[in-house]
Picture 1 (cartoon, helix red, strand yellow):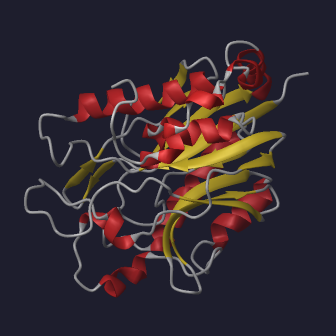
Picture 2: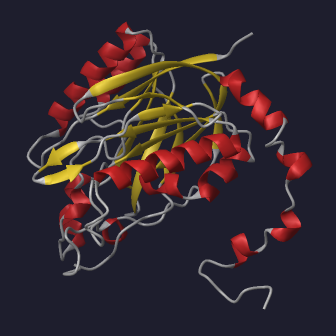
Picture 3: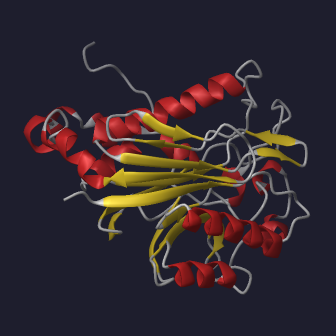
Length: 311
């Protein structure tokens, strides 16, 4: 019997610096209503879904950026989103900037079940960018200044009748992200992203190249771990800074089964059969039969490039 998860990839268009959370949550609810009308039972929103992409701005006093962070979840601002999801019986996932009670700052994402209960949390592992203002860049990307590397690892949850994992933005570019979840049998990876359409250190790498690398990463991760991948963008021009779109859903064979062709608010709905993961997991990517861990030591022994073993 098929195990169908009808997922809605809920892309958000730009969120300007002046736009408040109440307005953003209203937009998210409107997307949820559209997804519900199209039969979705699980909705996925982008990274930092509640705010503009604030790491583009340098602030000497980091505490002055705390107003972009959520000290509680759900909060008064986000409670209507949780209430609507519970009323629809719809599961959801979204990303936000998390400020913990003991003062830690993370780029986080959550899984929320159909009863409106948070059942999983992931904190972004692979933080891109830099710490100090960089005069050589065309624009700043200060995630390393405002966030700490995540401390959750890459867990997988029993969720919506299958095995679900989360990642955030730059994580999708790292094969280790998918493989750690693949070794837990993951059947669907959901991830949000806010990706500038131009590389700040290489201006010739523009939108076409950025979208190529995005698709390549998601498709490779899906195929090599026989899992669905649902990747959701925050897109468009925020306060003069352009973020690419590219919201898409990839099947366990690495094929894109749907992609939004715009940068506005919108939903991409697809019925994903989790049993489509079985063939790959039992054949070419049957890890138990085929992996040779005795040769993989460098993956965890080194972070940077070292001397070649065959010298």
